[in-house]
Amino acid sequence: MLRTALPKIITDTLPGPKAKALIDRRAAAVPSSIRCGYPVAIERGEGAMIEDVDGNYFLDWIGGVGVLNIGYSQPEIVEAVKNQADKYFHGMFNIVTHEGYVALAEKLAQIAPVKGEKKKVFFANSGAEADENAVKVAKAFTKRPNIIVFSGAFHGRTNLTMSMTSKKAYAVDMGPFPEGIYRAQFPNYYRKPEGMPESALVAYYMKSITDVFEQCAPADTIAAVVVEPLQGEGGFIPAPMEWVKAVRALCDEHEIMLVADEVQSGFCRTGRMFATEYWKEAGVQPDIIATAKSIAAGVPLSAIIAREEIMEAPAAGTIGGTYCGNPLACAASLKTIEIMERDHLAERSCEIGEKVMERYKAMMEKYPVIGDVRGLGGMVGIEFVKDKATKEPAPELTSAVVQECAQNGLLVEGAGTYNNVIRFLAPLVMTEEQLAAGLDIFEAAVAKCISCK
Image (cartoon, rainbow, N blue to C red; front, side):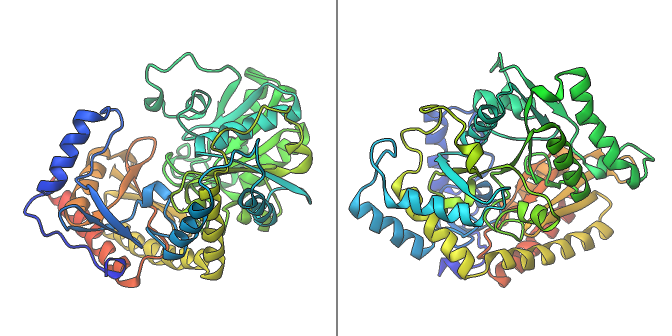
């Protein structure tokens, strides 16, 4: 049974002959700018496993880049989508009210840790759309034109979210970009200024925000500060809680909306349903949450959540869209959340994360190329460097480890400002045997790539 199988490569080469034929067809029909460096053409997926068209088995620690926290082809979700498909595929919410949209909005309003007693929710189709709509809502509520984002941030590939995203490799030849987007430093403590004591770090990184007020845009023109509770593309860097508290206080002082981009960190990935539950436990909450990815087990959907007074600010017709809150996606999402709560996948995320962190930290002691290991719950990053003292990034080694893992049936993906981090985004339904096998493949790949340098 694929769901409980272990990685197994049966072809002499990767990609195998059938996969290579499909990958060649892809190259002829699809723009190469939609990059793919993996030798995999999927036939089917179950749990945390992929079978390719040649019969090779791969353990997937990418999970559609955080989309498959609940795994591939969860039978109850498949059935929920089939049941909805028997009724109707589509019903635009501007035209007809459908039960799934309303029920899912009610559920997310109940569980999302945003400020306020009465909350409202609306839906979009992707993480970028969620982020863009969160900014639109913040601007409508505050009547202000500007926002602050951070170094290392990734928010999407629309025109607005490309400009919000830090790494400009995602925006080559795509300008001009919108005005009114200003960037402060994200608190990456691993790469803090040399010699700076930890006690000074919050003040240091907060100054980069207040510098925006002085040098770029006054505080009373800032609609929102948009932050990932744990940076994804930026290198799996958790926002330190003392810094989050300081940002919340600054936003309160200047009546700025605090927007949490939970596109990648939501739906049990970090050991909570939302990573901002850690914020709430520490006494602070965002004003707006934008979330997507694992919300609907792979069916396109995203959500924007805030208290009622914020959500009622946009003028009629300025939010929404044709496919937003599609009935099939809402059915998938409702069942996904039900299963996550019933099967305690947030707790499972913590269990997996503890075991991965333990193994990665042991590797860090053993291999001088591992500079840092960090994360929350089952969202873990491991950073590779050429030298632990200088912290010079090692992107070539990182890429080699990714490819070596794939050749042995484990799919992992890079990240980070310097392309020297490997992210752990495995489905939370992975078995203990699969986790152990994956960790063994990963460590063997690191050891082999170091020896080949």
